[in-house]
Image (cartoon, rainbow, N blue to C red; front, side, top):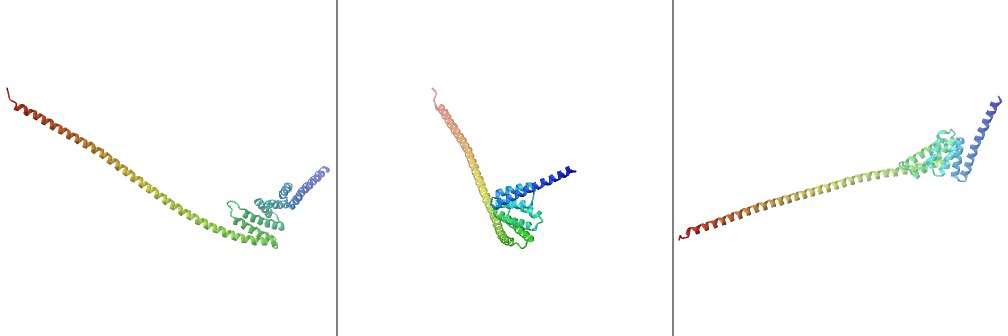
Length: 250
């Protein structure tokens, strides 16, 4: 019976040391945080969480990465705390800081995410904080400021969307005009090419016709020359014949 009791006592002792070690790391992290050594504080909080996943370490880790402007990671930690803790005070703090992180993320900007989306989440976070702690004046002030920023941003985005649509329409119209102009130029060029081909064809036909005429003329001229030569030969032959008839016999 002694041995099981000894083992149980040993386990309890080890658990106590384990818990104390996590608490000591948490306290070291808090000291570094107070000295604004946020990177070292982050390391201590992470080590503490490895030994004991306490909500305090998780919340403080969110604060440490927030101070380093790693807002997306801070948002993740605050959301986990706000959704898991039953402590209303801690829940209110987590939602308050979550709202702050969303505000900063909206200002920092992110691809494919409108700033108004983050501002809207900030407004909702502050509202949740006030549901858990209605007397928090800082949260009320931040909520008021977030609502104003959200309205301005929504108006700005709407204006940008209108301008964007207008620019798209102008670009479309410009593209249509450019296409029409290009088509017209192509048609004019095709017409010119066609006319040029027709002119070249006519020229070739005229040249061919001229060659044929020259051949025919040369043939006719040769025929005329042959006919004239025949006439001359015939005349000579007749002349010789007449001379023989007029001669006298001895």
